Image 1: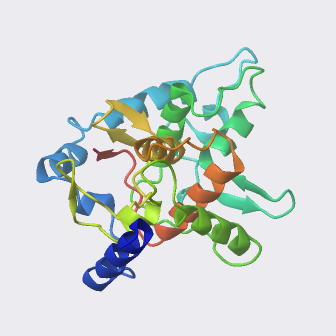
Image 2: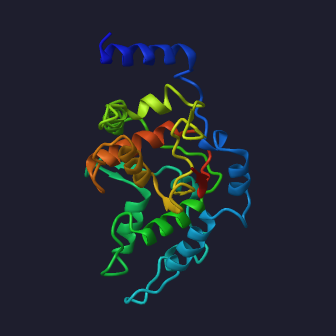
Length: 253
């Protein structure tokens, strides 16, 4: 039997033994009990250090004498939590995906001549703080209208095979959630906990960084930072999390 036929046969068996169309379940449902305890404990969750650092940056006065908190409050209390739960958004006029991090960068560029670069650790700290302001809010990404075509492009990327491993995101997160790999349960790949603290790396990772890390595991060339592909895939993954509560900062392996 040819290799492609074997992979197809295994995939079909997986479809018969798993529910591909199961209700969305947070990665929290798949992590170990001790990891859940860590995430739930405000003194043990290491991701809250990123929240604290993000708040420091949020209140930092730049060379212009301005800070993020001037508009949004020292605790971010002026944020619209329901609006935060709608990121990433699609801007019809410019045909651009606006991630939460990109929105923060755009705001930052109005108060400093030296905004942080995409996925800089300090920008991820800021992103973590802002996302945490909507902790517990239900994710509600728009899926109808012009954005639907962009989401479909992200779904195509999700089902495309990559790298020397010759697997797609779908192979793990749709076919085998709940199965074990490297001592951990495979999750549905939901995005509601990101930015999250990763035990495997000892650092915070937002969704785009996590996608790049996954692609590296597939022995594939990761999508470039700020690339159209990583934004489309990230948008699609967020739509899969519609209806789940924001957990940032989650703790994941």
